[in-house]
Length: 144
Image 1: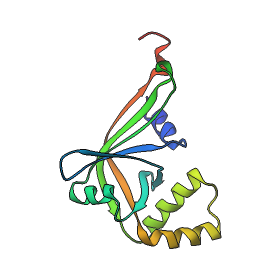
Image 2 (image 1 turned 90 degrees about the horizontal axis):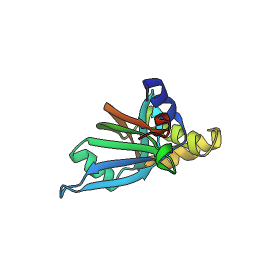
Image 3 (image 1 turned 90 degrees about the vertical axis):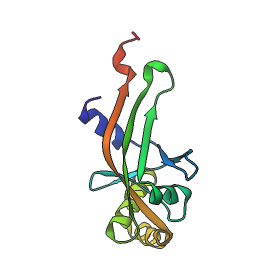
C-alpha cells in the first residue's frame, strides 16, 4: 500500500490485534478497538490489564489490522513500535472519545461525561510507530 492507502485503511472501522511480551517471554495477543490521538494510533484499556503490565515492563508493541475473506481480498497493516502509556489528562479523554466515536457513534455531552467516569480506571496506550508493513492482495489481479 502507499502511505495514503495505509492511512485510509487504518482510518476504517477495524479491530487491531495488539501483541506485547509477557514476563515469561511468550507473546500476549489481544484484539482491541482503536482510535487516534493527534494522528497517533491509540487504544483505551484498563490500567491493570495484562497488556498494560507487559508494556510497562517492555514497551515494544506490534499491532495488526487486517481484512479479507479470501486470499485475493487480503489487506493489512502491521504497526511495529513502542507503547506510550497515558494515565491522566486530556490525551486519555481524547483516546476514549476517539474509540467511542469510531465504534459507537458521536460523542455528545452524555457520552463525554460517561467516558470521564469510565476513564478513571483506564489508560490510553499510544503506539509510536517505528515501522509499517502493508499488503494488499486486491492489487495482484488474480496472479500470485
